[in-house]
Image 1: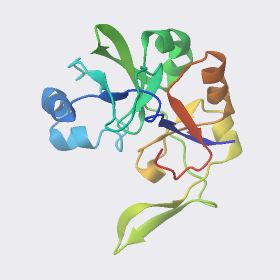
Image 2: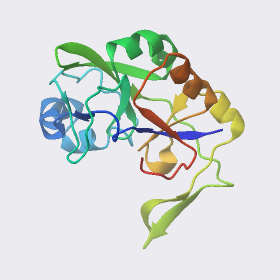
Image 3: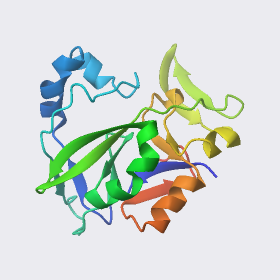
Length: 191
């Protein structure tokens, strides 16, 4: 099975990281603001430019969350791992991307910038094109062997805007009892 990974914004506090401040802090080192805005799509490393600007967990208005997640999503295609989640998953994830430290409530969390991409299965995937412009994805799928051979991954088919996995990663999260993620069989869902 293939899953689109999203964060459980209803039951857990949400990450608040000031994107504008981050853009001004590391954007120049990456080659400008446009390079920062496109780092996911370009599948670009942030390690050399990274600076810990700090972040916080916040409630979503109208919801009653009080618990911090062990692992969550930031900016669509990055994990944010608590110290516990990092200790449990770093070895498995490290070949697939990079870890960027971020201080949250006095603790060092890690943002995992996934640099592992998999091609979408063109037999079942279709982009939405209007006036020769990419508007989004109508359908998305991956070859079974690609999912089985990649613990977590992004795809250029959706402009590297989300993280995907198979049963192997989902089972690791369950075994380690890490809270904060949703594993969606609908690969087009937002949450």
